Length: 436
Image 1 (cartoon, rainbow, N blue to C red):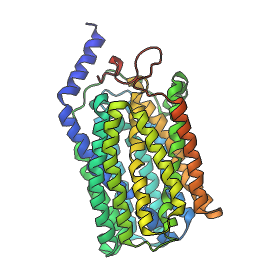
Image 2 (image 1 turned 60 degrees about the horizontal axis):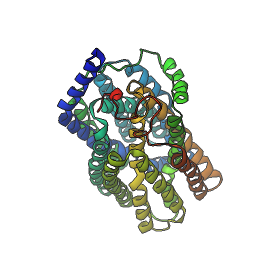
Image 3 (image 1 turned 60 degrees about the vertical axis):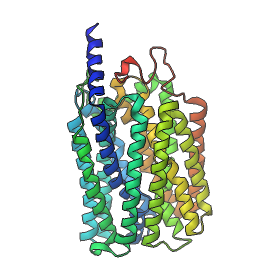
Image 4 (image 1 turned 45 degrees about the horizontal axis):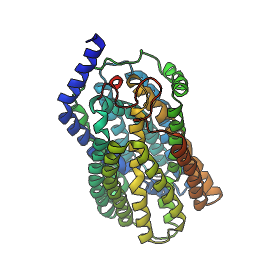
């Protein structure tokens, strides 16, 4: 057997030997890490807090935009830091820890500052959160690709989201019905973010217990600028990935409306802390149940069909939002939004891992993540402008139009990467990937 084949066989053997341990680590990391960050990312608590402090749609949109801008360049930096490394567990731990420290900063800003100073501090910490989030996404997804075989990624990722959704639902209800309603520790919103930091920090234990094989399939060491220059050739060499790249970015335009759902709802009904807790809980529960099914479906039939279904449901949810006039209808909307809320990202992340060659995974993750993050950066601010100049319904219909374009690209022109061929080797679970 040639030396390269023996090395790849040894890597596969290491992956299989430690698979159960690594699956447990992934579940722990997903359950606690996602629970913490979902409290911050939810389109409820943070937008409501920012609007309470500022009274401005533009500030609400700018906050999410700054977080998005933080993620624009950092994925490429992350790819340049780990693409050449035989082991990336240490880098994953560092970036994950730095993310969590920014959530602690949000809590401290709420407790210690007020008015304009609190808004300014929140904007700074959100920008830094986005920066380290972009790096962490590359590291976490690349690590998952190294330790979880392609045949198990869908169900493992689905189980991560399922468990995180259950815990997020319980924690979200606690946050809304108790922390906000009773203004815990003198500032209910800051208490929510402190809870997010504490719960999210437990997820680091899952990363720490990972047993990572020494990878032999690496990119040459390169600077962030060189990694950035490598994105264009990557897209030219793989037209299918390029079309997916565009479709994922356009589909993610749905994020431009996320901060404004609850602000719009407040113009039509009374939004109390209990209502915030209820709709966030509903969002988390519907997402958790759906994600387990999406993961199993993706493992069996490929993640393209999952991406299509989730994009269609997300578009339908945005089309329903202008007609919401009561708490009951708002709950229904968040159920409809929750079903695809994690499934879209889950399917997209798994498809990124299955396109092309294994040593390009960090760069593919960075390239796709950067495109999504550009949209995430500009989208909420543009959404705030549209809402301020025209109306909230105009914003929701614009989002629907962009997502419909994305849906057409995926349905008509994007193949399932696991089954498509580029003329050299099967995508996904080939010997080249070292995962099957």
